[in-house]
Image (cartoon, rainbow, N blue to C red):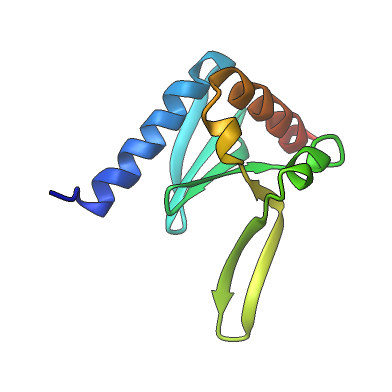
Length: 113
């Protein structure tokens, strides 16, 4: 039996929040059709359709490009819009909690600058 899509989204968001909990006081909230995660009131992460995106900057963008990661994008009536401040976290990183936290720390640094 398939789970309700809203339940799956909530489970993924809670899973990510649990994995990142050791980084400090994180706040999860609604963000358009998904969720945002903030550190010190600065958004460094968003979850859209069960995909995790971290904030990038000059110090961490290259890591995403090595994996062939794509920026967050959405479709409008005028075409696709890319939000190049947020890139999808590669599956290999999602599967390694230490690596995920390391990437999250760099995303927080990018958001705080």
